Image 1 (cartoon, rainbow over the protein chains, first blue to last red):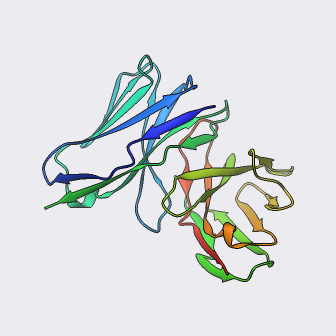
Image 2 (image 1 turned 120 degrees about the horizontal axis):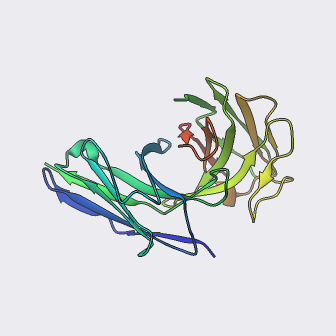
Image 3 (image 1 turned 180 degrees about the vertical axis):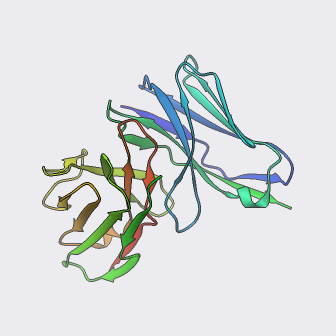
Length: 112
Length: 114
């Protein structure tokens, strides 16, 4: 069955450092992968989409890589700030319409 | 982008009753989905709400328990029927303006069943 794995342990990081999150998947051949941010009591918010033919994508302080051979995506938050504290979810399409399956998410806590 | 209004935001219900959750999008969207998020867990897709036809349910979810309506391109409802404490969860409506597009989410409905 299709499976998405994200580190379940919270990532505690000091302000200014780079946070790196991992998303591994099995039994998928996705055309793209998406990353979302979720704050407590809120729905997820889209951050980035990276396609299978893209190695890297950047948006402001965010960087995503996508290695279809390793079946892995890395999500980086550079120069992290306390406002970056949230849970970050990766998601993969499970059909041609874009129906998404989500990983369990990794909580990031940035301390001043 | 799409802004999604979902209501109620929370409710406490008695076992055996039903609750209908409404989802209103501020623009016409192609895709609408309903997810469930149990405490401390990730999102699980319940079904795809299809405009003008029956919803498409994921494995483990059935129409009798979670009837869904989508009368037009901006509105959908999810009913949680004959509730039990195991239905206590956050229910999230989401939409996409096209296929294989990013999803927009409502703020969710936090349901507690006593």
